[in-house]
Every structure is written in C-alpha cells, then in structure tokens.
Image 1 (cartoon, rainbow, N blue to C red):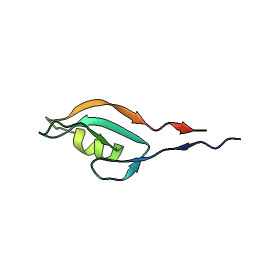
Image 2 (image 1 turned 90 degrees about the vertical axis):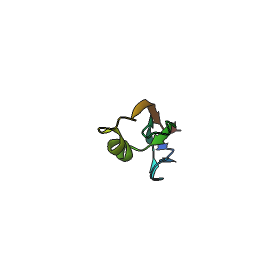
Image 3 (image 1 turned 180 degrees about the horizontal axis):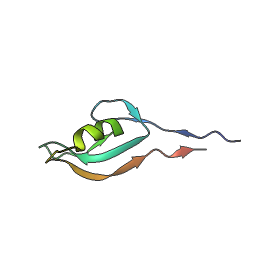
Image 4 (image 1 turned 135 degrees about the vertical axis):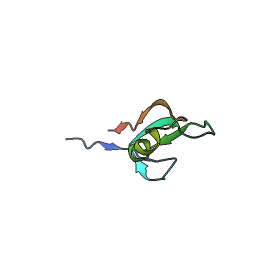
Amino acid sequence: MAKHSRSEKPCDRCTSLASLRYRCQYDASAQWQLICPSCWEQVSQDNPHYRYGGTWKARKKD
C-alpha cells in the first residue's frame, strides 16, 4: 500500500501551513493572496473588497 502525503504551503495572511488555500483579494490593495480556510472564513464575510479567484489544492505525492 502506497502512502500519500500532501504538500503544504504557508498562508499569505497567517503563515500557517495548509494543503488547501483560496486565491482571493480582500483589501483595498487588490493584490491576489493565497489564504488558508480559516483566514478565508474571516475575510470573505461582509467584505466589499472580497473577490474569489480559485482554489489551490496540494498534489498528492506517490
């Protein structure tokens, strides 16, 4: 049985490692950021600057 692990990368907002990140804009700078699900919940709610740009998922390694 082969083990599968996921690569994790840091959240652009809180720097915690995440295997799932959301690409979004959430402030007046309008810069794209890749953020973890926890940060995404915080910035997506009632935010006039919020714009979703896709989901990044870590690839499984063989």
